[in-house]
Each structure stands twice: as structure tokens, then as C-alpha cells.
Length: 165
Figure 1: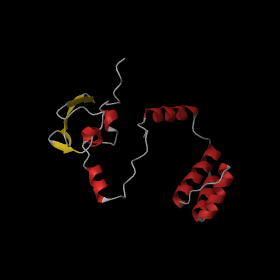
Figure 2: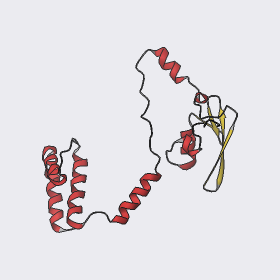
Figure 3: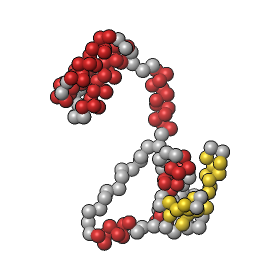
Figure 4: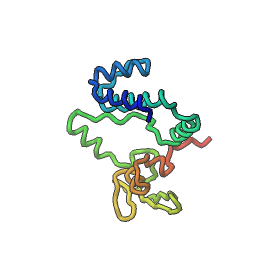
């Protein structure tokens, strides 16, 4: 790393949050609402280094765009937690997985080939059976298969039912 950049980064470590916010506005040309010292430090250190030694190459930027397009993105906001009466909460929590119109009826076996192996999941009235275990959601099953969190409906390719025309 450039010795001048090292000195600037060392100065950042000594700054208060207010001073980091001021420096952020200087380097980025806009104020920040962030107040997390560690985040501000990392962002400013990156910017100082990028200005001194050059930013990401166009190839790296293109690859980042490709990865972002392939990522599973949340298309709807998370459900609001109910703070109402206990009766309403128990009614919502007792809803069965089959209440989603993307799911086939209980007893159906979903098959998904992943990394050369076929995975079979049975739809139960109150969950999903996979390799002798019962899971509450398809996402939990998908996570057990892949080792990372992913949308169960997307993983098993269960989308909205299309009208036949």
C-alpha cells in the first residue's frame, strides 16, 4: 500500500464518528447518515486506497454485475409481526404450508436434482419430510441440501400457477 495512504488510514483510526462523517462527505461528495464507526472507517479506507491506486477494473465490475443478477433477491418485504391479540397470533401460526397456492397437495413428492444427486421431499400437511427429518419450510429443506440459505420455492422451482389459455 502507498505510504501516504497508510498515514491517512492511520489518522482515520484516531477520528471520532463526527470527524469520520465529515471526511466521508469530503471524499464521496455527499453526506452520510451512517453512524457506525467501523463501517465508516472501512468505507473511507477503501475510498482512499481506490483514489490513490485505482478503482476496480471494468472486468471486475462486469463480474460483480453478473453475480448480482444470478443472486436470489427478496422480491417482497418481510411479513409484519403481529402485536395484536393472542387469538390472531395463534391463528396465523397454525396456518399450514399447504395454504400457499404454489405448493402441491400433501403427499406429493418434489424431486430436485442438485450437484448430480436427486433430492426427494415429501409435502406433509404440516411440513416437509426429507431424509427422515421433518422441516417447517421448503427454505429449511433447501438449506439442508445446499448448505446455505436460499428461497425454497425458487430452489424447487415452484412458481405461481399460470392460467391455461
